[in-house]
Each structure stands twice: as structure tokens, then as C-alpha cells.
Length: 385
Ligand code: GDD
Ligand code: MN
Image (cartoon, rainbow, N blue to C red; front, side):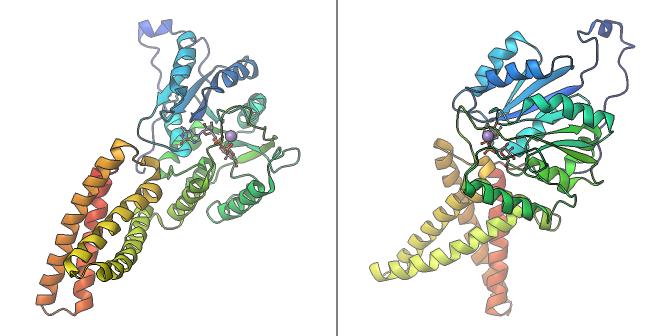
């Protein structure tokens, strides 16, 4: 996400007579963006609380749902039928809290944008105070923080609290600002602050606030206000081991993303593990079958399948293929890698015939095939943009 800044539509359209009949008497102030995945039991509760908390504010709410199996999107649309302030963006074939929040903000035209979880764990009653602080003190971001005086983790177990502490420490390596709770997913951002950052964002994983602070070209003016993380009453947390991995991907992107795409680095690492598993399987199967070509064929199949599974989980978690799409993706991956192998052997043989040493020839072949496999599979297997 890069290049020219977005235009904020301050140029007026009131010159057009029919537009004088718009419904709002006051301009839209606040869009509340709510990322959801399997929150059908929570969205109505949250909406009810927003009605109370935001009384007197011109607001709207955009739920960004990643095609939840529990039909959260349908529940939101039912609510939206009764109130045009409620909107739903349903994303299909994609996952990720961070990218969902970015898309919600891109669909907003308000001057201020809040982000709040859809599960009632954040304290929506703080929104008016956060908005007033942002506006009155002319700030870029106001953050609901668990780590300033008066805030708290609620009843987190020691394991989660420790993980959060480590993640917060790690965030320091990419976030220059002295932020007590960069892990927070509860904040309000001004439109100019968003617009000057949006094209630099990674959009990876859960930690959108870290992404924003690490990507802004001009340091944000910010303030943290305390709140206590509530206990989840309905539904389940989506935090799992792979969320930690995605956080590592976000940090990697901020460290080296300008030089080389993180996905490519991970793809190469998976490829490296493929070479090792290939050799292991080859040595085993050679003992079983006396024929080298059969053993080699078998080992290649195992390595390709392993690479596909790992890439699907690690490299492309946000576009993970499941069910039927997993199978068709696997077949496509086989086809792409087969061409990669041909190119590898072809290039290496030509180089070797031109009197390059064996390892330069081998490396040239391997490089060509990994670049081919990565670029073609990113388009035809995981539909990368
Ligand atoms: N669209 C979308 N896509 N939404 C998602 C996804 C996804 O892949 N994964 C989670 N969400 C939504 C959930 O439905 C919920 O509304 C919100 O994002 C937070 O997810 P939880 O699974 O409830 O997260 P948590 O309670 O463990 O983590 C919270 O604590 C962190 C602080 O350490 C979240 O508030 C984070 O935002 C916060 O950073
Ligand atoms: Mn939660």
C-alpha cells in the first residue's frame, strides 16, 4: 500500500440543489469500525450499548465480518434494515483483524474513526471522552489503555498476561512512540492521521495499532485513557498460536519489508525446510524401493505437499485455503512446482554446460525455480494482489 495521499472530501457538494435534501442535519463525526468473526451473539448487545454511549454524537457503525460461519453478517444486516447508521462489509476468502479494520476505515467518510472489538470486552462508554479528548487537544490518536493508571487486564491468566508483556516489549522495536499499550485494539484515530498512513500499512494479523504507529511518516500526537478489559460473556476468542506468528510477520515486515517482501522470505524458509524433508524421505524410500527414480519421485511429492501445507498455514494464513479450495489449490501448486523443477534442471544444466562450477549452476537453477514458484503460486494458488 503506497504512493499518493487520499483526498479528504472537504470540497462541498451543496451547490447541487437535490443534495440539499440530505438526511443528516449535522455532518457525520464518528465511524465506529468493528471487526467481527463469529460474534453473532454479541453484535446486537454492542449496538445497544453504542446507542446509549453515543447519544448526542453523529455516528455510524461499520461491522467488517470475514464471512463468519455463525452468520454474523446476516445478523448485522438485519439490524441495518432498521437503521441506516449500521453497515456491514462482508469479506469472503480472507481473514484478519488488522486488514478488516483498514477496510472499515476506508469505507468511512467521518472525521474520526473508532475501532472497538465486537465482543463487549472494550468499554464503549469511554468513546465520548476519547472523542472529546482527540478533538479538544487536537490529537491524532486516543487509545483505550490497560497499562496506564486506572486501567487493567481484568481477569487474564498469567500466561496471557506474560505473552502480552513480551509482545509489548517487542513492539518497541518498531514503534518509536512511548506507548504503554500498543497491543490495544480500542482507539480513535483522526482522518488525516489515517490518510497519511494508510498506504504504508502492512495489514498483517491482529495488531493494527502497532501497524499504524510503526507506519506513520509523521509521529502521532496521542494520549492514552485507562480502561479495564472486560471478560468475554459470549462466543470465543480467536487468539491462537498462529496469531503470535502473524505478529512476528508484522514485525518482520516493519524490519525488512522495504527491502524484500516478508511473504517471500517465509516462502523461501518453507522451501528450505522442503529440501531437508526431501532428503530425509529420499534416504528412507531408497531403502524401501531399490529404484532411485521412484524414491526421488516419492520424496518430491512429499516435499511439495509439505511445502503447500506450510505455506497455506504460515505464508498465506490470511488467505488460507480450506475444503474444496484446499484441494484445487494443492493441484495447482503441484503443477506450478513441476514447471519450477523443469526450469531449475534446465537452467542449471545450461549453466553447467557453460563451464560454471557445480554449485553456481545448482544455485542458479534453484533461485529461478523459487522465484517462479513464489510469483506464480501467489497469483494462481493464493490469489495475491
Ligand atoms: N473481521 C475479522 N477477521 N475480525 C476478527 C478476526 C478476523 O480474522 N479475528 C478476530 N476478529 C474480531 C473478533 O470477532 C473480535 O470482535 C475482535 O476481532 C477481537 O478478537 P478476539 O478474539 O476477541 O481477541 P482478544 O479478546 O483475544 O484480543 C483482544 O485483545 C487484544 C489486546 O491484547 C483484542 O481486543 C485485540 O484487538 C487487542 O489488541
Ligand atoms: Mn475479545
